[in-house]
Length: 491
Image (cartoon, rainbow, N blue to C red; front, side, top):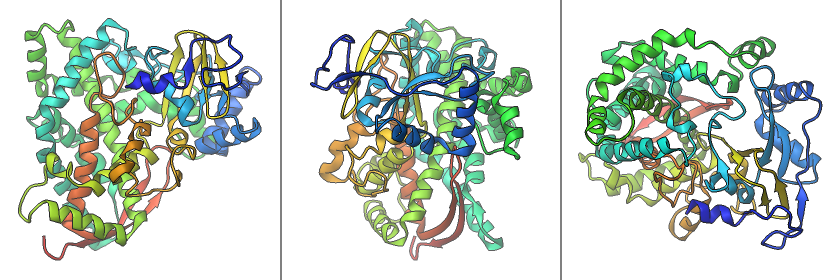
């Protein structure tokens, strides 16, 4: 399915004057400027002077509306020696990044830099492997099986986490506004580990410092991509974007996390040994740490505040509709399950719309396997073998040529016949209506992420009639602060 979508916008005939669709073939506009100085200036534009979206929109305008451009991407000097990318900034050209036959994803997860393998026990995690790598299929097989086998544990584990988050929110509102992000960050780590592996959650096995260890480990990996954390910005740019933080800073934290997962995930490791997966027990362990903390926990940390943000902005009219749907589908006193939320069309649409508006991972990178002709809506462009390709997903999934009111949150966009648009929701590194497989790069936990979003909405509107919250947009995740939570009149 992925390749079929991408084939409509990418051709191997890079010498043609017309693309397969009859569009004129051009050289990619834009440029990279003066080495060292231009990537540095562009980094400051991206993080501080313009912000990500305006950075791209201003360059689209500068190049006559072209949505395939040559630009520099941060972090730039000195963390990376080559900031040059070909950027795909519309839905049609972006789809090439989902075609594993055309794009090599080796070491491109974080873009123009690669974190030290010392952060991963010396192994290259699945997310950094290309689909053609022999290790990829073996590791992906384990992850797909794990997600499927544990799906029935997701709802009970989430119910526990949700209860802890909102019991704390209810109690805290007596003293003033309550920030959702802090509660989500704290309790979703326990949820992630309980849902994936069962057993003792990290907060009990490792103490209150478990979340701090996980966040520190993520931070040392991703600090070149972070911003608006430290003031003044000049100091932040020097500390986070100029030099790599050494893995030594989190070596003890990572050792503690690995020791926890060695016990928590022992059943998965034992099953893989018995199945002769072809992956050593140690390599699989470090991959499970990465999957649980980076992919799952890190994703929920970003995704769920966006869901709450859009619900808060939508207001009581949507809240009433959602509450009505949830309470009609799940009798009072019954548990909300994954099959139950699958029968809630509006809940499902709200979650897909949140994923369209704010995909948890905004970027896609990969290298062209061969010379290509890549089509946007209005033209086609020559891309050379080996060039780094980049896509900014929020512009692709808010493409006005694909979606009506593309820049607006439309809660019922995917209800009924509008579900045909799901192929253009690609947050999981593939179309929403396709499935992860051993031979593609689509997220193996795609269905778990969607299920958790639905469970969040359903649990919220069974417990509450409505709520209000203040939202502060930040580069990674919005800061959502509850100002009121109105309990349901009859639970």
